[in-house]
Length: 149
Image 1 (cartoon, rainbow, N blue to C red):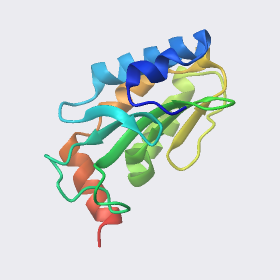
Image 2 (cartoon, rainbow, N blue to C red):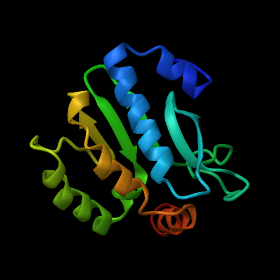
Image 3 (cartoon, rainbow, N blue to C red):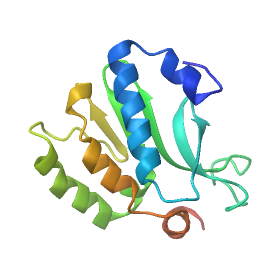
Image 4 (tube, rainbow, N blue to C red):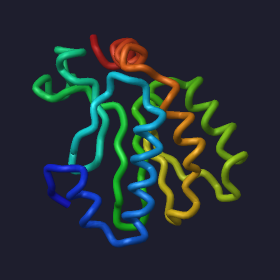
């Protein structure tokens, strides 16, 4: 899905996915600490640390701002990509422990990607709590300790 705006991205989705992505976006925007910026990033709805806050940018391409979080409607699932959970074992452990309290389904997760095959099974409250746990400065410190040499 190629688009330049979050609204256009959402509008292109089928109604079931549109509702889930819209609710995820709303949940994230209500809980994400101040300082992150929403934009289309890597073809998904993403939240980044703007270059005005972190001029070094992303180590893979310094022209790009530092990515933090993305949501996407993939072919077979709704995905939440959270870079902090990939980089912080304590945060990952917390999420894995909390997940069964919010869902009867087994957690389907990669390194930073949580996959939800059934949009109605997305644990919105837990996602909201997760995204509120790191400020931009927390993420920058964590990022630099893991990825910047």
